[in-house]
Image (cartoon, rainbow, N blue to C red; front, side, top):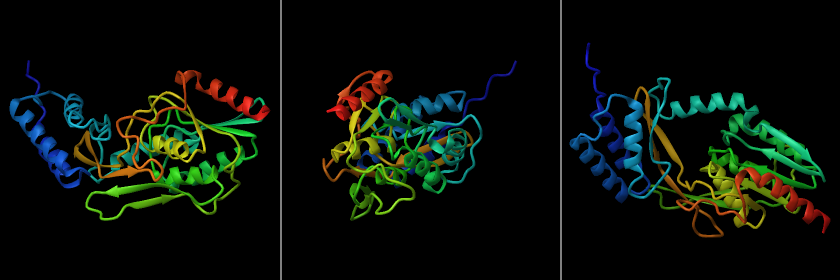
Length: 301
């Protein structure tokens, strides 16, 4: 009987540490984490048999200093291409094709209240502009709108601005992204024109959130909340505000490293670590019924 061969962790750790040092938005934290990974490697903490276990251990160490949930070593069951970002993009495309382009449900409830579910991601606009526009245009005639983000794990910041554009009347500053090494922030604004019809900026709007809501989906909820445009109903979200990029460091492993940080123009901060706090707290499974009741009460007033 042969003894299983241990996974060669050193090349993975060396490459992950290099990526941190070169790209992480917080250089000081990157130095701490790189030293931590190399020390743990020397101690034998990463002497494991499989890539999945290594991913779990390294991710825990990466998040141990500042709790950045975008900072991960992700395991992929299917071998991933070496090209930067290819692993994430391939997985996103499969999800896009299986979810009607990220808008799997448009429903009209009693009282003229529409529900648009955006899940499992806010996909790149080159794919998602048409399905998002179709869903939001269909809901534009509703008396009130509920946007369900409970199952949305993030995605494209440009898709956030696109969705916001249907829910506002005027071009509006939504967010500013500060990149590592950049002297000036990159501003995100809603669009002056959209394909289809807007729901607009005056009718009642509710956003459903839960502890699975993450990243760009959190930005959508946070932007609308800070503008006073939407009432967030449900649970606090996961708390990831740093956009990241992914690099393949092993046939089954992808290092995701945040390369920027978001700053909201209203609050002057973001939802990193704290999550988006609901205006109306309740259990996520109950949030749709709660938001519907709130909408009906407001419409009858």
